[in-house]
Amino acid sequence: MLLIVAYSRAARQALRNSCSTHPETVVRRFGRAVLLRETEYAAFLACRLRERFGTGVEVARTEPLNEYRDVPEHVRAAAAAYEARESPSTSYAKFAAGTAYPDPEAMRETRLAD
Image (cartoon, rainbow, N blue to C red; front, side, top):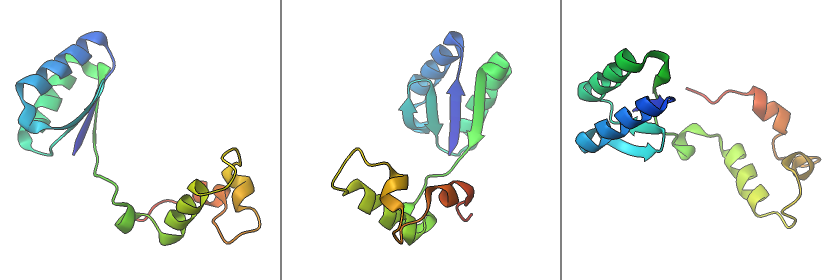
């Protein structure tokens, strides 16, 4: 998918107009950001916006995160256990200390597999 983020007011308006005019290319709208299907026409729209607004529009290629394929089991288990904790005010670092759950500092440094 293509992620387009519009920073200026004029760029946001142009992005909204493009989305309204070409809804078949839109996957999801997030206000100033939009996900477009990865098609040549979506790339054309993105390039038009970049050409017109320069750095007022950012375009990135992205793909959805499949948590079952892309996230290790130990991270998913830690997230589920942390959300089920008894005290909602306990930080993850305190929750994970002395357990088999991954250390937050180690997770910050470990990239997801491509």
